[in-house]
Image (tube, rainbow, N blue to C red; front, side, top):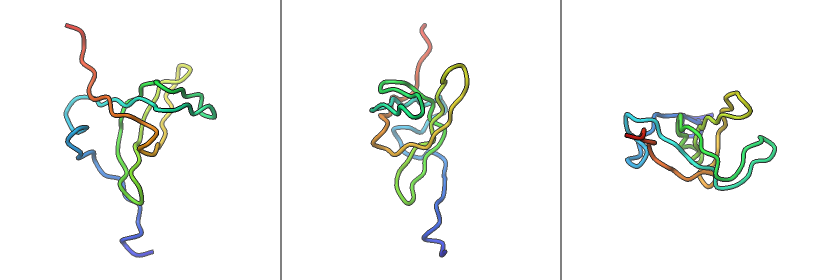
Length: 85
């Protein structure tokens, strides 16, 4: 395997999701095998850029944390959630 074939993870650098605040994503479809449903919100933990764009997302599911790697068409970036004033 040469270096161009390696799958690498990197810190989030995209301007729409990079910030000091916690970033959130919303599922755009059901993932029944994982008991995740369209519209469910998860915490964005990382981004993979190769060989295709995917997001490392953490969900709260049945009282425990579930961390999954999702292709970009499975999520919509919601941005930071702000606490009510």
